[in-house]
Length: 452
Ligand code: SAM
Ligand code: SF4
Image (cartoon, rainbow, N blue to C red; front, side, top):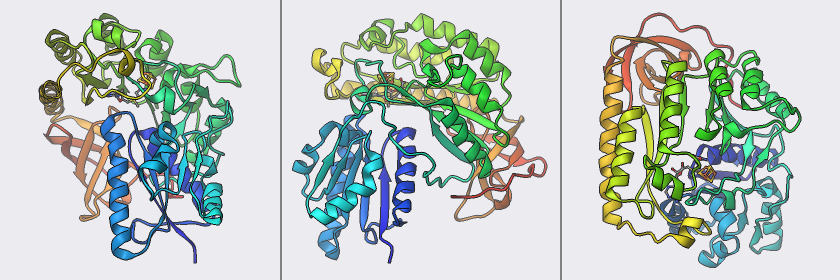
């Protein structure tokens, strides 16, 4: 009987996609997926260490698995992957006797091999090597569960060393994938019926094709636009300082590029941005936003924001609030600063904003943001928007959801067969986190949608 695996994923889209790729590798090696941890022979915990809380989740989860093993007498093999594995290496084994394998971010392709070796050797194994320029994953083995959309990594790692960020230490130096390989993967997505591609990279718009010196990120968007069957192109995350006029023009002119930009700013205070080593000022960011809004009047923006960075005064925080109002984001991920190992901020800048004050600031920021997005959604009542259906309700077949090109979540009644189709929906009701409406005509037919 085939062995069963369960992958649990914490953190960003990059981790979600790494999990899809690990699932593909395990299935190639003869494993079958399961959703139940008491049924799994192998549990893979794909970790995130961007914030301390995300890291703590690993040890909480290992505690649950230990409890379950105690109750059922059945202990699965446990592999820890992702950023915590890369950062802590063998220390993970010292902290938990339950762990059999620790695999760093650039060694995940070794997962099936290490599982077999750990089983044969009956002892834990650690592989957190960082081979220069070896591909992290072999191509073509990804198991994609989303029948409508697919991720494609174009850049791995980061060289920017923002002073708060652990990513350059956990994901390694920046590596660009070949354009030909990226386009082949996008074509595979289209051939399997997927209609939307999301290009991923820590600084996605820093892309420069290693196999085509003339192709920058705007050039890559032009090449993806040509792939038949793909109807929508998204990307995350761009860095403000690489949003060139050429990129803005490409976004304006390419019909498949969505009218949404996740443009992380981190703070509204130039003084704090400098301490964060973000390499842009508040003024430069606001000028860029104006340029974007002029070129693409229907563009919806979202962002990442950190509160309570070392030295952040109440005045700095007020600048974050005023920038939030000035831009009018459609959504925001906001975080309380947490010092991360090896980073410049953790080593040189005292974490001097008290926890209670960080909480007060994030609550105030989130309340402001919630009001802004609620009123932006409210203003869309009465409009008809084009929705790509990506979700059907498990409980009620007629409840559907999807996103507009601008990334607004739209809920509406319909038929489950509309999954993967574009539906015009008239918006009737709005809330802070989405809108509700009625379809105005039958969905346009989808190309055949498959899961593989
Ligand atoms: N590469 C992206 C960029 O440059 O914006 C973001 C990558 S990071 C994985 C995702 C988000 O986590 C960041 O944009 C930042 O807001 C947040 N973050 C990173 N380090 C943090 C820290 N030490 N404390 C709190 N939030 C942090
Ligand atoms: Fe981290 Fe900055 Fe690189 Fe983004 S750009 S991954 S925040 S170091």
